Amino acid sequence: MSKNVNGFSKLNKLEKIDWLIANFFKNDKKAKQVLMQYWNQNEILQNLHDDFIENTLTNFYLPYGVAPNFVINGKSYTIPMVIEESSVVAAASLVAKFWSTRGGFKSNVISTTKIGQVHFMYEGDKAALENYFNSKKEQFFEVTKAITKNMRKRGGGILDIELSDKTVELDNYYQLHVSFETADSMGANFINSCLEVIAKEFEKEDIQIVMSILSNYVPECLVHAEVSCNVEDLYAENSVVLAQKFVQAIQIANAEPHRAVTHNKGIMNGVDAVVIATGNDFRAIEAGVHAFAARSGKYKSLTNASIENGIFKFWIDIPLALGTVGGLTSLHPLSKLSLQLLGNPSATALMEIIAVAGLAQNFAALRALTTAGIQKGHMKMHLTNIIKQLGASNKEKEFLIDYFENKTITHNAVVEAYDKLASAPLSHPDDE
Ligand code: MEV
Image (spheres, rainbow, N blue to C red):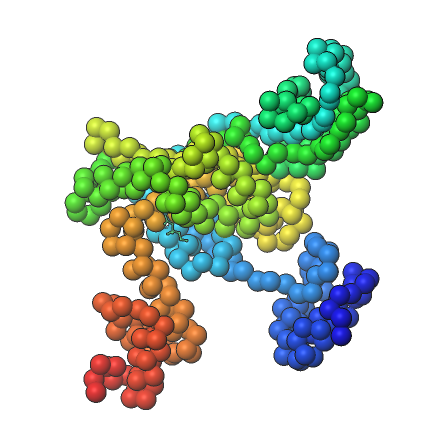
């Protein structure tokens, strides 16, 4: 049987599943059952999810958790997080509590400008192009008025339109570089619609429009978050040495891209989890953040730390183009609920919250890495996962957690200990 298909999108959901099962799963009923067991019984809700994308077969669950006790600019937050990695929410919760007794997190938005570009080719005289652009500039604002009307009411709109000469990078390449304020929406559709109308207005025989699209590189949509405390308040003992190690860990990330990528990945554990929970576009955020981390020409840490006059300070500057209206934010019932949980924040307030979530994750990672090592906490979570998979009772679980307190946790070791336990209930697995 051919594994290619015509008109797949015209089949209904069951027909699509049947085609898949017949072609890739040897008609295995179990595979069909796996797909269908995630269908939501609530038909309205299922239809809503079906319509998000093409060819929906089922839903893919990710855990939705919360990290309470965040204090940001003096206000208390319980932050929603969607993530599959076992340690992330636990780390966020621990760090939130830690800093809540040390003044909490401070965060502020530095800028909110977004960028879109009309990319075009032009072989003629540059001065003539500049004249033409200047003669058209006012008209660009005019022809986009219908699109920008509502946005202008909300304090947004097109900020400026510049002609940019890119011919050094690529022969005949110019662009219209357009800056936008999109208020509480992420603004992708708004920006792209404006750009396409501007491009149409600008196009003529000797100007060949190649494409019009927003940029996910948003270094002017920047948020800062920080924590600080006396160095002595940072660790139970050995604070000065450990705080220095913490700062060195960041210096290492700045010196060594291999480390910086992992360092920033840990930050994105926190950022993405909240971005997803609030229905924002995590691919856009990821692309923009990593480009920003490499803005000096070298990929570096997104966070910084200093020790000055006995004060430890730890901060992040991160570009985050987010929305709290439009897109999935109001369509997905859980995104809506997440935003409610956060007090229906403006896009700028959400930027502050998400920057804090990223900073908190990095704090947890660096504190663990420069003290007991990351595996201790990770393996503890791993242990509970294995115990769960084994179907251990609560009593057995307690026993195994206690047993592995000072032992190396491997999957085999846990299975072995559990097997021994199961054959000789609640005797110590080391007792022969
Ligand atoms: C794991 O998801 C994230 C860490 O590797 C981050 C880091 O190394 O800083 C722990």
